[in-house]
Image (cartoon, rainbow, N blue to C red):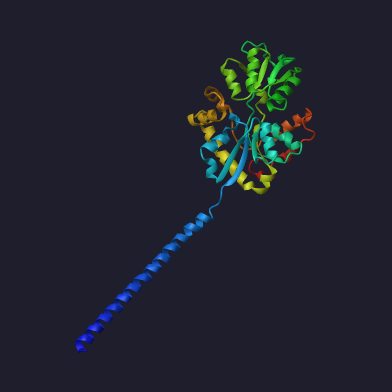
Length: 337
């Protein structure tokens, strides 16, 4: 082999070696780049895997404008804001809502306070965690030409009312009794009570919103509004089970409700608020607009007022023992009471 040939082979070998080194370097760099990309992807993947799951809370509810804060919080995404998955199970009345919670089918219910007080006094495993609204807005309505003008005029009259344990019925019954004017209660809910009023089978009807506004818009007049003006109305109540297992989730629920309260109170007749109330309850828009500003929502428990209601239930034989402050959840002491 000539010197020229030997040099040519050597040159080719060097070029091959350089090419090999270049290729290997590129492969190594690509490998590092790929690893780097994987490493950068890891934090995102880990964060996604460890993102906190939403707290599931099941609410049993009988639809009414008095529970508007529940519906507003649901519709405006406030539960999502506090990482809550709130499922609502619809029932026919407050007692059914209470029973669903007691039986374990739900965690929380909104209701008239006396429904919760009586259940707690009788040993039900529930506690009141927050107020819904105050004062009681239920009032007595009578025909425009009614001769009833003072409490004494109620003596022996037939008066419609949803229940003898309704706080408005309790307050009017107590006031009439002190005036020596016991009346006869016909147990009728809102719609049937208005029908009875129109038919003349009752002299008056104790109605809550929106039925009070419906009757008022039809020409019936309100009497003795001051009788119920200091009585707290509606409470939020939770099972002992969820209080023990997830009190923090319940506290977030109340934070969401508190925000809903602020939104409603800023303009209770706002178009979106009225729309939510009408869609959930089926109440006439005119009645909602007429009386919605009477619903003073708030979460602070009116301890004295609720204890006074318990006193009345005890005096009337509806409960055997007054629960006192044991009706309120310790987990919410310093928060809502």
